[in-house]
Structures are given as structure tokens and as C-alpha cells.
Length: 247
Length: 300
Image (cartoon, rainbow over all chains, first blue to last red; front, side, top):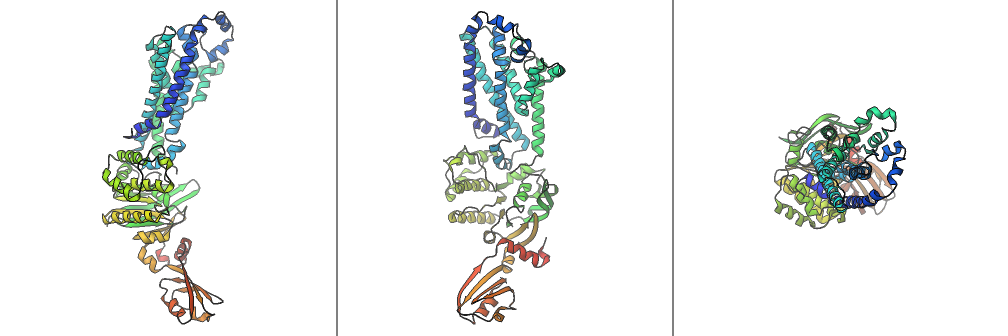
């Protein structure tokens, strides 16, 4: 694990990844275990239908599919909490990798070894991508396993696609760390008319606008997220190439 | 004569704060060069410019004949560097850290690394976080020397008070010099630089004040003498002696500053009954003042 910067970075995060994985799997399991009682609870659907649609837009999205397995997954996991968790993971990872307090101190040592700066950035990004994919893998396994256990009819393939979409979103934010502002743009856009035209510019729209859980991945949205991640990476590369490394 | 390091008009400003100003510096291949100056004078800034950790505001610096900016990776391959503020990966053991850094260099001769560790008394199995400052310093020295680089750039390498370690460090520098390799080290300790180096450059407030052979500097060294006599002596006995100034008489004690040889003062004192002689090494500030007040020919 000490062969290169990528593996060393993964090694540094192995413990952190383990705990994130355990936490995420536990949360997913608990959420899905609630599904049967949620599905069979009399009168709940009626109550939800009476909520103001602005509230629904902010926290759930589409009322019509609220009680289907996919609707449940969408609202309970994919709409808000899971993407935020993934973004928190990559934002912490991306923030710590080069400009974190620890990394800054040891950067002197690293950058005076025969390795180009763009290589360091690329390898750290690679480590972040692999770690996020691993976290996505854990999440997917937990979801697929528990959904079988609670007899929830949803295709593992669709779950994988939705998970991949989360991973891409998180990677985009890992590269730019702009999570909160952009999230609010998406969630509030249906409520605040003035923001409506910008709705489709939000990374959150690219992530979930086409509802990968129901319809599968939208290639344009995948490309947009990838473009954002890679564009931010390119900025990282350029900026780090030029930057003075502070003592 | 090839140069291991060459700065031309090298300038670095940090916003409004001064870094270094129009520095011209030449370090020859195969010499041990001491870069002497008080803290904050710009020693570390110069070193970080040479290693492309920071970019110059103006001017350029060449390392081993290569451009510090354009050929940074090639330079790093051939240079060993000890940072002044050493930060290592706390979660690794000493051995793991050295393996990792060796891997980044595409491998080094491991028996030599073990040899260095043994001589310095450095543990490979302890986690860096649990090491004392002195032991971290040892790991820092090993990673700088382990690939037998052509040029060693050592930022304040002799901070440790451990005399045994200083001795090993002097040996390492001597071995590097015997191999024809170059050592560039910074220090704020004049005695240390005098002991190790062939030449020294003196830096003050971001400017290179003087470059001098250590032997030549010793010949012109400033010393404070304090001579205690058994009874008061006539002050005329010590005025107008060559190289002697600032003569002060107080009861039976004569204080004076001597540049170069102390022979004349000792001979003048020998005519009276001497109880004690105390000699103070000059501090850096006085060495600088000697340069400022002295011959301007040495001012770069």
C-alpha cells in the first residue's frame, strides 16, 4: 500500500472508509426495514397527499410514487440523505487530500520527490474516486440485500445505476466542495419561481432529475456530472501546478 | 568549474512582506556551502525556490545546471532535501515512511538505508507520531541521504543538541564531500558552519551580504576579550594596538574587541599580572555589523 501516492492515500483512508461504510450500511438497513410497516400503515398515504406541495417538493419530490418501492427509496434515501452523506464523504476527502492541515505539512516532503504536481493531484483524485466507488459498493450491497429480505420489488441493476449516479455527484462535489449552495438551488427551485430557469443547471438536477431509480441513467446528466468533476479536476491541476506551497 | 546551484537576481515577495531581494548566489559542485543568517532572513525562502515549492517573483535559479521550475522533477530525483520544519506522515512507522519515499524515487539501495539507521540509532518499527523530535530528525536525515544524491539541501540540519548525532551528521557530510557530492546547508549557528563548511554565504533581511571562505572569515573574526588583572593597569597599554578597538577599563578589568589575531593584545597583557582571560565568540549580528562597517568590497 506504499507503492505510490494513490495507494498511500487509500491506505490513509481505509479506517475512515470502514466506518463510513458501516454507518451507511446501518442507516440503509434501518430505513429499508421500515418499508413494510410504512407500506401497510393505514391512512398514511392520505395524510401525505394533504401536505402542501411545496413541502413535498422540498423533501420528497413526487407524491404519486411515494408509496411504491422505488418511490420509497427515492424519497427516503436518494433524494436527500444519501447524496448528502456521499458529498460529506468526498468533500472531507477532497478537502483533506491536498489542502488539509495534515497534508499541507507533509506536502514539502512529497513535492520534493521526483513526482510531478499534476500526478499528485491525479493520484489523489483517483484515490478519492476509488474510495467513493467502494462506499457506493457497500451501500448498494446493503440496499440490495435488505430489499430482498423485506420483499421490496426493485431491480438490483437499477439500484446500481442510482448508486453510481450518487457516486458521480459526490465526486463532482469532492472536486469543488460547493455542496450546500448547490443543494439549496435544486431543492428550492420548485418553490422559488425565480430560480426555476436555473433548475437544470444544478448538479442535483443532473444527479436525480431524470430519476435513475425509475428510468435508469440519463447519459446527458451523467456526462454533465462527469464534466463537472473533470472540469473541477482540471482547475485543481492548473491551480496546484502554479501554487506556492505554504510552509 | 561547474555550479551545483546558481541564483541570478532571485527575488521573492510575499505580498508586502519581504522574502528575498535580487540574490546572486553560486554554489560550486563538490563543496560544502553554509548559508548563514538569523531566523527570517530568507534562507528557507531561497531553498524553497530552488526546489520549486514556491515561484520566484523575479529572477531564476538553476540547480545542477537545470532550471528549477521547468526541470523540477529531474532536479528532485538528484537532490536530497531536509525540510526546516519537518513534517512526516504520523501514521506510518519510520521504516514504512522510508519505504514509501524510496518507492516514490523508484527504489533505493536498502542496505545503505539500514546502515544509516544503525549509525544514527533510528528505530524503523515505531510510529512517527510516537517519536521524539530528535528521532524524527533522524528519519528526516535518512530520507535526505538515502539515495546518495548529487546535491544535499539541508535546512537547519543541526538543530538537535545530541552530540553523538552531531558527530554522525558531520561524518555523513564528510562522506558526501569525499564522494564529490555537494552539500548546501542553512544555519543560524556560526560555530556550526565554521566547523562543517568550506564556504559560507551570509544573508540578512533577504539580501546576500557576503560570500567568504570559512578560513578567510576566521582570520577576520571578531572576538570580545575580557582580561582580569591582579591590579589596575594603565589604559595606554591597550590603545593603538593593531586590530583592537572599543577598549574599556574598569578597575582591574580590560574589555576590548579584537579582529583577527589576538597576538598583540596577549603580548601587551603579558607585561602585567593576569588573573583570567575570557573570550566571547561574536554573535551573528556582530558578524554582520563587522561586514557593514568593514570593507565594502565583500558586500554583494
